[in-house]
Length: 127
Image 1: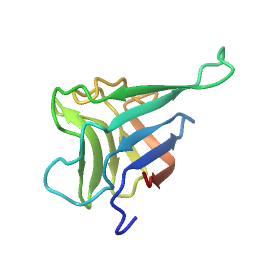
Image 2: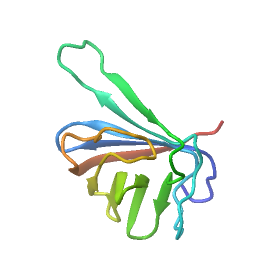
Image 3: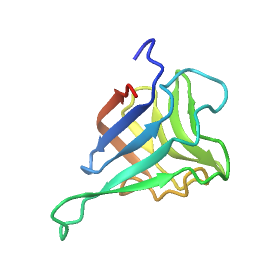
Image 4: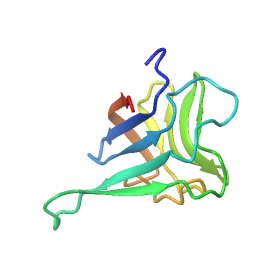
């Protein structure tokens, strides 16, 4: 996504077959501080057997802090506060964590806070 400056959608499927991700106001870039806008949000699919179609649960920005996006060569994080991230991935994009965070007041996106990332897609949006 080099030289792309628009918003992005990140989609993750973990080893438990859970699907979740984020809408990002900016593409990832290596920075020493948080960036992004209140347009960012986290989401997850509720895949319950009694429902014929999965439903998307969205966790929008709460306004409690501005900890939208943080990334460098070692990790990618979305949302934060209280020493936790809403969504965090290591530099290899294979191991991740999801916790509740004040930025989005989100639920844990995976079944457990720690997850193994099996597939990930990031789509740039031209709006």
